[in-house]
Length: 186
Image 1 (cartoon, rainbow, N blue to C red):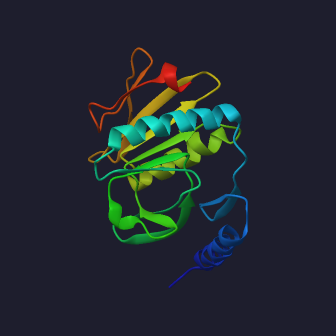
Image 2: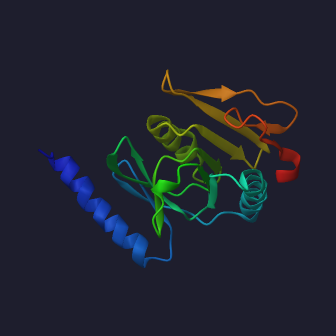
C-alpha cells in the first residue's frame, strides 16, 4: 500500500516528466524535488568538452558509451524503479540495455560532475544518491581550484573510497589504463 508521501512523489514525478518534455530548461528530480539546473559557465563547458573528448577516445571500440548533459538518467537498480532522474555533466554507460530513444534507465558505470553554483547538490545529495545506487566511479571536478576527486564504489562495503591521485593525473581505479592529464583539461 502506498503512503500519502509516495503518492505525492509519484504525482510530482509525473508533473516533472511533463515539464521535461515541454520545457527548454533542464530539470532533475531527486528525493521528491524538482530541481532546476542553471546554465553552466564557459569554463565549466570547456572542462566538460575536454573530458568528453578524452573519454570518447578511450572508450572507442568498446561496449561503453560516453554521454554528455542533458542526458536524462533514470536511476534504477535490481529492477527497482524509483522516481529519480539526474542529468550529470558526463556519464559512461557500459551496460547498453538501459537506453531507450530519450534516456538511460539503470546505473551508469562512471558519472562526472563539474562543480558550479549548485556544488552542494553534487558534493552531498548526488554523492549519497550515486553511492546508494552503486555508481562504480564518481568523479568530481572543481574548476575554481582546478582540482578533482575520484571516488570508487566498494561493492562489498557498499560505499565510496577516495582514489588517491598524483601529479595532476586523473586515474580510474575501474579502468586501470585510463589516465587523464588534468592540466590539459583545465
